Length: 330
Picture 1 (cartoon, one colour):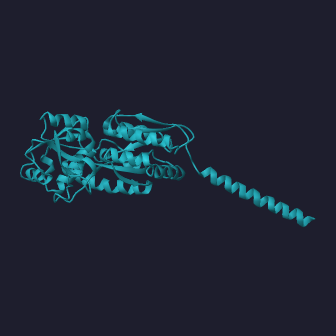
Picture 2 (spheres, helix red, strand yellow; picture 1 turned 45 degrees about the horizontal axis):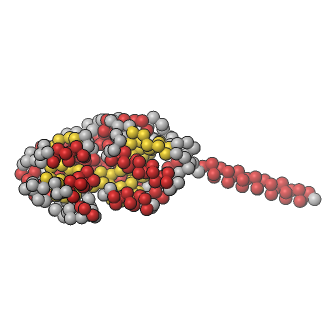
Picture 3 (tube, one colour; picture 1 turned 135 degrees about the vertical axis):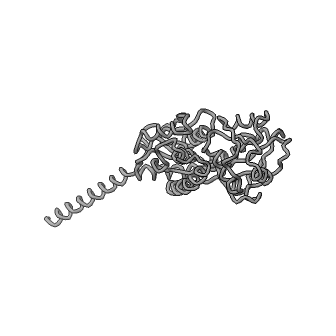
């Protein structure tokens, strides 16, 4: 009888231990307990706002999260206002922000005291490659001709960019022209508040060329008003811009995109990172996401939290060299 009692006590102890272990395991699997905020560090209608709202819609429609997801616009300071807002919530996985190169360039240029390393990298979503665009009556026919003219005279053209010096649009052009041997310090660049505004300025003859995302000029290209000379992608785009050669095809060994990623505040836990890794891995596999990639001329470049951190580290080094050459690095 005592042996049975002993066995029972031992069995109860084992069962209790197992239940505690299972309970601890489940406790470690973090998930949001309240509404999730996705911050767009720009105004309504901008590219980061559009990205945030696409992600929000798919998360909700596909039921990839169990809580409401809202988009909050925090424009200003080349993205620094939105980044500041997110980092006011350290260790809180309920706050995410659509990241661009501003997370890197702002620190290099001394516009922000924090670097991308002061946030939690979560996902790289896509690259939006940029093209040099001219009016259809421009005598410049190719990207190679464009670069060669600037090699001889860096001030030969006025070039519109958006939305800031050191931003993705500006930096991508500088990376490519620097690789072509152009003296990028002497370029005549004109900064506009957005891609649509730069396209309007080009149509009006206020600048000779612009560097912008395909979506900003698609309607004008269809109408025969504008022409794209070259694209900064590793391979040609599809659809409307399939006939536009890459910089590499034009003899310039360079590519540079305006990427969109997602980062969170500093101090997020391993469990929080693992949760968002699972969610975003599922999001990029949905038909809805693939449709958005195609419709917006976005190129899939998804990577998880670890891959995203590696890419940001690599680009920091590249952008620091380029912005240093321009005299913008602090």
